Length: 257
Image (cartoon, rainbow, N blue to C red; front, side):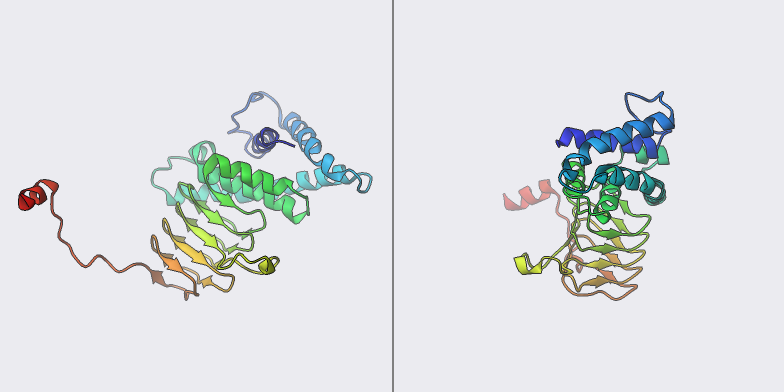
């Protein structure tokens, strides 16, 4: 199993989910042919993982994954629509699907999360790590994320394993949903925050802790550091700078001289 094969799997999966927008070598293939290529590619990845297990393990995983695809595609379309609705620079859903790194990272997460729920070993993490390398967004496949997630710009976004994100959440670059501690005894415990519905989190915000909840319809300003819960309908931000004075560089040099 290699990262190029992971990239190939993602390309074939998106070609099935978004057949009208696919950018691939086989644009002229029918949906049935694309499905067959995807099935073959996925089988090639999971068959080694099933060695020594029950006969038919790989085929069972393949058919389970293919049966999940319609629901994954529906969620991804909702994510794309959320980006179009929330970003004035997005001209169309086609542009989001083809160009937006945040959308690509979320698509990879949704594919990986479906496999994670089916207890597929290793592959879910490889998928999200491949997307991490491509987009700069690190979303653990174990995170629970609702519909219509919009990640704008993507670079530096981190979403931890036990994070829970509700519906219609918008996240900007550099946001961390992380844990307060990294001790081994925290394994299998809720370590990452819960973000409720309709929350906006601006660039550089850090929200930590498994007991931390950001209530619905809240706005989290840029570069804030949060380790305790925020009530619904809250706005959290740094206080404005205590001076409105702006000194042009030329004027400053004249004063200094």
